[in-house]
Length: 138
Figure 1 (cartoon, rainbow, N blue to C red):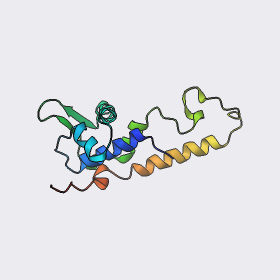
Figure 2: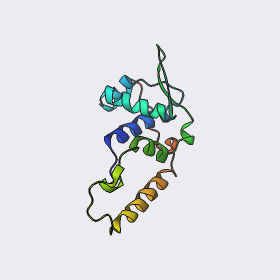
Figure 3: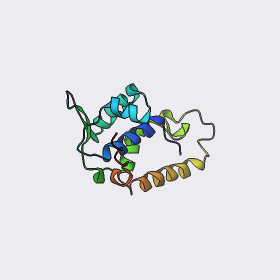
Figure 4: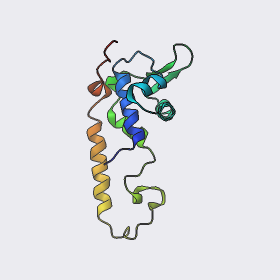
């Protein structure tokens, strides 16, 4: 299974936030650390906020903080939220795509099972398990 860059970047951001759960992180700060687009991270941050995984604050002490302790947020929950609307294969998408073998395909059930097993395995780990080490002080 291949995750979108949206999910990849979101996981990196959540791993950093898990390293200092009470700290507010700005998109500018995280973008600089990982060499990513600030605008792209802002969209990811918005999705994570809408999903209840982070809380955003405005102002001088603004930024994003985890909405719950890292030990209470599974990797599977993060991936499901960020991959929402992304079909693993065309036939899983809305309308089923243009598959010519959908009536007799025996692969679809196996792929659904594999996808479920993948997410179930990610549910066994939390952000606390994958938190990045705190950056070294300059």
